[in-house]
View 1 (tube, each protein chain N blue to C red):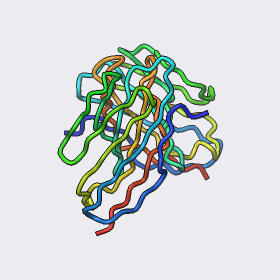
View 2: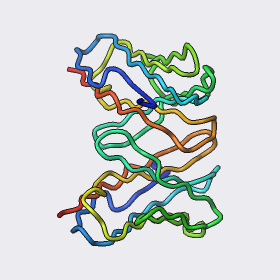
View 3: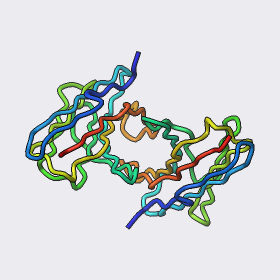
Length: 113
Length: 109
């Protein structure tokens, strides 16, 4: 049973397209996150939701829009994809806001051509 | 500027060696310091350290925080090839967890 699952694992698309990445956790956690890891392996927070409410929104282009239909799901929609969006996107969850033990999904490798 | 700075960026040692990985952090709004291990895919949690300075241990891994030096070390003794990974240090600042760039550790058989 995968605790934090993301789909798809790989996403190859053309510049200008719109794409979504889905994330689900079955741990009963309250808080979910999106992180971006670039080619230099630098892991940066993008968004965080606590019980469907947005609590962290880093300086991320408006083309990125997270959506949390319920506390077990946090999806990421990206409009007008650019070359610089190529990275691995990790979803994560934690028991509650401020709990530092994060459980990560296995990542979505996004390649924009 | 980076809040969490790790060194070295990469390290290659032989199986059986002991390694020490370093992490320095900023004090503003500091709550805790974290270590994660990232093998092929998802990072997994190793330790959480606070200003108490209490050492954390798990098998051959141990870590401690020096609040005077604003730094932490992660020690791995008797390294094995399975220890090859990227080791990420992170700082809990307010509601956020901010990661360093990681140390890529490669253990040669």
